[in-house]
Image (cartoon, rainbow, N blue to C red; front, side):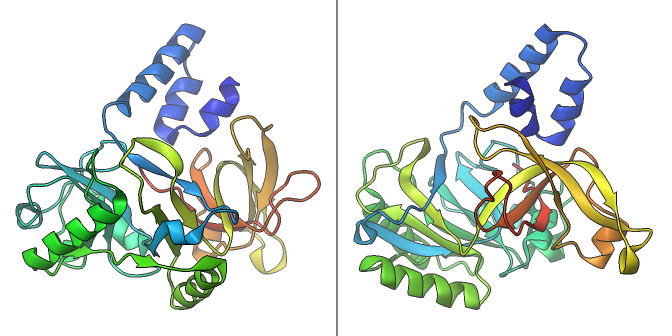
Length: 299
């Protein structure tokens, strides 16, 4: 159980824990890590299941950026880590609780993340960042009313880098499938579904769902597999450890597809957490057609 927990920790904490000399030190670090996340109310996303009633939800594009929560004059990640944004950016935000994505454009996550998560503010880079709002959290109002409220507020605010995400009502799975195909064809990562009548609640539930054209997960890099032929002297594949969920066994497998020539020369560090996509599992519970996407998103 402890190994399974450690696999999912951020790499700096993973290294520190694995060097700890006593079980008590490990437990203290785990409890401390969990406590860091306890105070910030955050609504988490679950994976779409085809048995839901689509017309019970509002649907929007899933923005491939850095999730950012604006509350009480502070802009933070979903785990409460501070985001060092320019003064002009922060001063433009309204005095209400907002949840959204700091984003630049489709298929540009690395630029957005490097800009937004840097402690050194790059003014020119931040001019390419927009705050795309998908919720104005309120414990009393259902999401449908909250969506109307943030849309009205931000349209009246009329700031070009603070934008309301459009929410769309659909009828049935066929319409949802058509929307997914259209958006992903244009470079979108996928879709998000918010239950219309759901009140804001911290934690994970089926009130907020994500839908992508493939499954996505994270794994920890354990070793490099040497390349052959064209990739002689480079990294042929990453050997990783992964588990489907908290109750499943740890699986060790290789990911070679998706690595660029640059990444084969300078692969992700041993111990780092990566993202990969796949299409179901083999009979041995190994992700089928696994392909590297990039480093796991900072929290």
